Length: 203
Image (tube, rainbow, N blue to C red; front, side):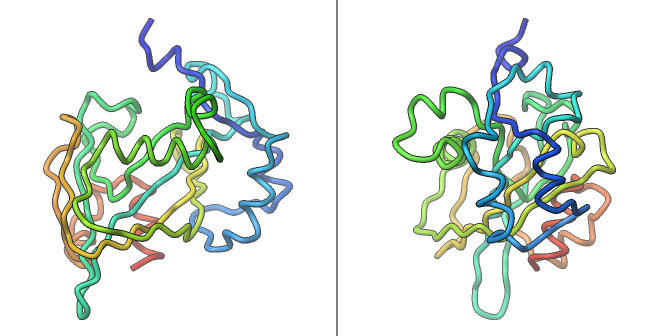
């Protein structure tokens, strides 16, 4: 059995999300949802192979969008997901988000939040950022219209880069670079659904 299928990942009951206020798509109201959803009493770490198809839980996923504002224009980091990335249902889709599951190891190594620890780990594993940046939570994504979305809840953070200096560290971060939101919209159908939602609401 693969390491990914054996991995235990952070989830909350879907009912907790629904009680907080159900939405479909992108929601900017971080202040409303994060304090409610991130209460430790709602957290558990469950085998990924079990929750990938169990819509009674939502896996909490950091989704970091890297952008450089050059004054008159914004450039957004984008890439193609290779076949070696964990979520097979997203292979070969274009993405503007860096992130992944919060694993049980993140809770054991965290000096603060397991979510923050996992988000920083994912960034370090997937890309090298060669410039200072600020990181701000800007929204949440829930997409129950796709098989992937039904079992995940994205916490979108915007990384504002001083310079457009980002390079792939993982072999499965393919064809990466920066593009304007307009250029990304020209290839709309190639984007995964979360990237479509983030692009439409952030830029």
